[in-house]
Length: 177
Image 1 (cartoon, one colour):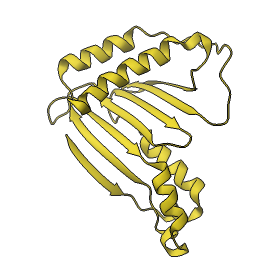
Image 2 (tube, helix red, strand yellow):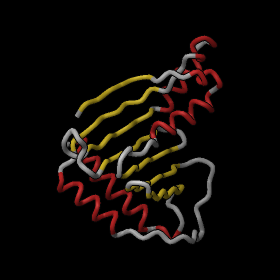
Image 3 (tube, helix red, strand yellow):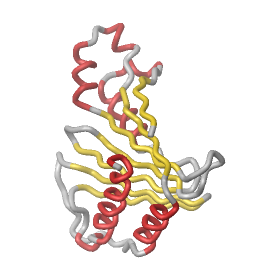
Image 4 (tube, helix red, strand yellow):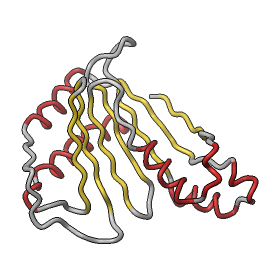
């Protein structure tokens, strides 16, 4: 595992906190470059987290997974405390950690994903202003599917949050083991 703490500067950083939120969410939700999976947990007022896993071995060896965490509250406090000049150069701060993924773990994740079907009807979607949104994205070459939901999701999508949790827990074990 390697861990990197960094800031990414951008000219549009001076436009306000709304721009910072959009940039932070985009960085946390950036999917794999090659075929793989992105899972993201996006609460309204807490740290945004994601896991990205490339399911094929890279040219550097084993398949790789990356965890990204953005502490929104901390960055918002830094932004509010900054003077106009500092705000012009402000950039969200992320913590990234990379892990090698064993072949057996890739097989477990692939099996979990293979058993999920997504109905294209949306029955009784959850609705609210604050809470947590989720993203599950699967990509293989030029084909991809992205499923996003809020809270528990639509009634007829119950298999998707269950699969999401199982894959997330599998990846979290990489970080703790």
